[in-house]
Image (cartoon, rainbow over all chains, first blue to last red; front, side, top):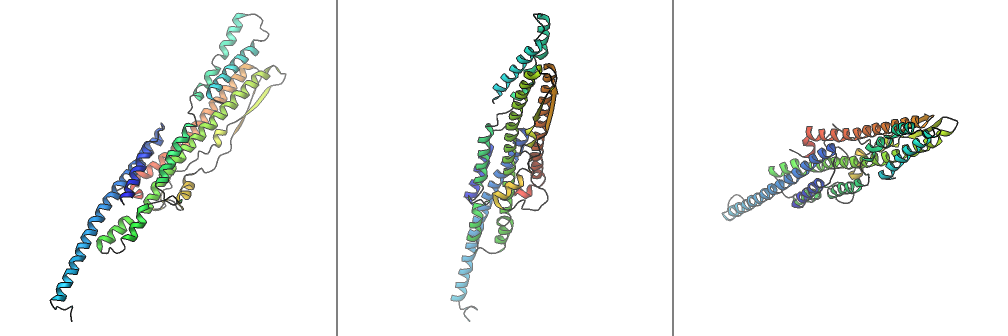
Length: 80
Length: 264
């Protein structure tokens, strides 16, 4: 995902650098530059959200594993 | 023909018109000056055309937009969210509410967003291509007007009325780009870059109108040449307007429906 964010930012930068003096074209160009830059930001945000969520998920999973082992070792319901 | 050559042609036309119109007036300096005044502004009629942009400058711009589109593509002609497919498979073991939210809110709609973003890029590229085409054809038409005008002035001594036809090829320029179609759902176009190109491509060139001019003397030829230049400028404006309309309409889709492009 960081690579995708980078792709967007590069595309936004490259597009911004295209010289042209037609007002209508330039106006649409700026809109697309905005969209691409925002998309880069969203992808980066999403990447961070995934990272956090996956870490939490792994921790939770690890917790579930620990609980499972505790119950098993304590001779709880899981043994029977 | 370069625009410098065009202006030289226009000056030649003025000089020839003065020469033809002065034939038979003898050494009358007043009449000679009056005739010179009559044709003095002929090159000025072409001056706005000489200020038209050089179509060659568009090549590099088009290539740069093409690069941007290539950057958003996987390189095999498909549109791209390069990381999304990989991400989807690498997260297959991640389950639960957060995972579902992420998949539904990001992984699934994103390829359509990329497609729509690319469509706008294709419209931008088509806009540049259309403008390049307009200026190239306008130059061609201006050459035609100047060359035929010059020939018509030269033929004024003939017994018959001089006739010549100008084809305004600028009208047939591939300028009829269409804006992003509205209201067709989330995915605006299908079929990768090629499909998008079709969406934003020309709707097909219109037929080039032909106008026949006729004149009896150099003064009339000069009037017809001025008329032809005026017509050419009008056609150029009309084609430019078509391109502007497509760019504006596309911009309006972006403004009115940012959600189609993943813009929250």
